[in-house]
Amino acid sequence: KLFIFSSSILFLSFIVAWLLLKLPEMIIPEIYNAASIIIIISSVLLIISQVNIRKDQIEKALWLTGASLLFGLFFSLLQVLGWNELLDSNAAFRNILLPFSLVHFVHVSVGIILLISVFKKIRKYRVHSKARNYAANVYLFWHFLGIIWLVFVGAG
Image (tube, rainbow, N blue to C red; front, side, top):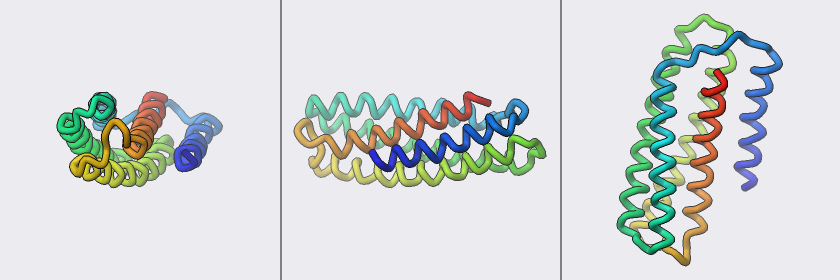
């Protein structure tokens, strides 16, 4: 929870900088709109996975977590591809959106590593209805990253 709090402060500083600088409306790279859809799908899959963990339907939870992980990797790829558009742009908002995207990518990379560890724990039946706190915390972090992305990209 401390990690989520400190990350919130970091991302909040990007939003405040954007507001204080009174930049013109940001033109979000089209690929970031696709990335937004992908991160929403990833989070929905994790929500369904959590329901299955509570019901001890471990095989379904394993597949849903694995699918969410694949969507997370695809999201990361789209984020990186969006950097090309940002670097080619000469607009002032690039100086806010590019650092935000880079820092977010680092956090997403951590989230992917954590999702891999949850996937492995589910596969070994170490996550189930009576032992789900670790997975719940990782899923919460992943949802947090998705919300931050949607707020920032939606603000543009």
